[in-house]
Image (cartoon, rainbow, N blue to C red; front, side, top):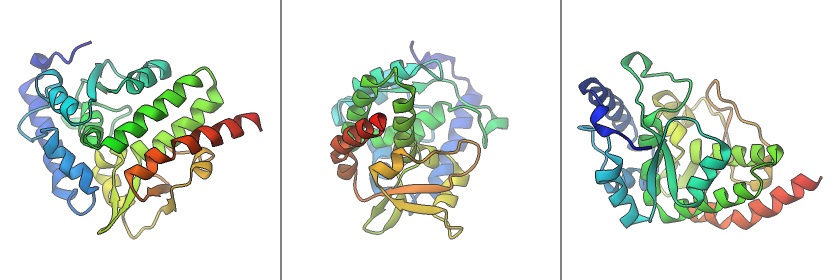
Length: 241
């Protein structure tokens, strides 16, 4: 499908601006520097919703050889991982309404683009996504394996933290597109923050209906990519036990 950019209304554009400005006001000092740099690299601004084909994809392809592919909403595991194994990030095209600014039952275009796309300017992170998706495709008909891969994706791509030289920062799109969880994940309320450990992560269930009870912390995006052989090894070991 295509984005059908011409169908966005003036109110859609105003909602994007509200969401964009609200998050950008609080992300400095909280978001990973690679994410903040990525905002500029992919050309995100408050003034307009990103146009996938005319502006965003040409930028991404020059940066990391990725692109954003429009999807109608939630798609099957096979479709999802096939797209990302081929360096296409699936993003829905519908945008929440004003009365939905703070809560949605499923991800919208703001979550998919603002939350995730700036990190697609980071090559090691992109290589991790593609490699993880290839692993998932080899197990796509095995529900237990897909559940473990979903945990890993959840605690990294969606709700990951990174220890940078100037402190703990956020790179997970599920946090970065949520004003409440952006504050909570780094707060003195102190949810558990656990060093990235593949074996532990594959066994750790996640929650979808409230802020996370725990976050896993990486040291670098290279660490994520270099953990791919361990992910394959630990996954296979867990599946035979």
